[in-house]
Length: 182
Image (cartoon, rainbow, N blue to C red; front, side):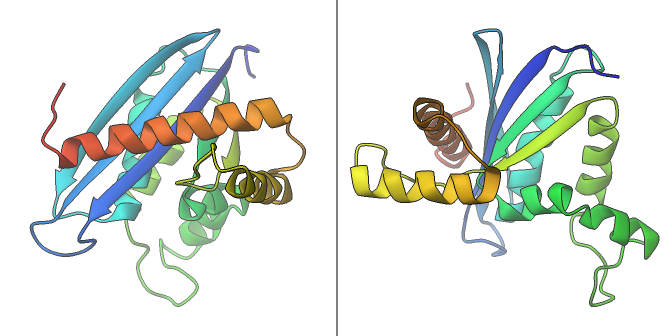
């Protein structure tokens, strides 16, 4: 089904005053394909961090130009990564978009949009520890071991590159909160 074209997608969401009226949230993403990069960011007022995490990936997927791509998606959101790795959405759909506690699934419309946008592609999800200072060797090593535990082996240099993209996405996510629009 996939064309063999690999696109790496890095995402992050941020929210100040999570679930507090008049708060501000932002999202950022970087798409990388054959050495070329595209950065996107945006945000909402009166939102949540989880909505911003999902919005980052939605925006990245909406920017793709063709179906059948191989996607490697890197996020520091265990909410997002675990949903797809553990296929939570299948249970939600089967149960009428209710979670294991029988409550309505939060952000249903975003999950449905993600499923629609992911359907023509092959995607792998990777969990990245957020807010790691790669210059701090002890913190970087701890994050590297966590990455390996959650995702399997990875070359250390590639891991440091993934961390730098995560940091860039965090910077993009906070731009909206700072009032930057371009």
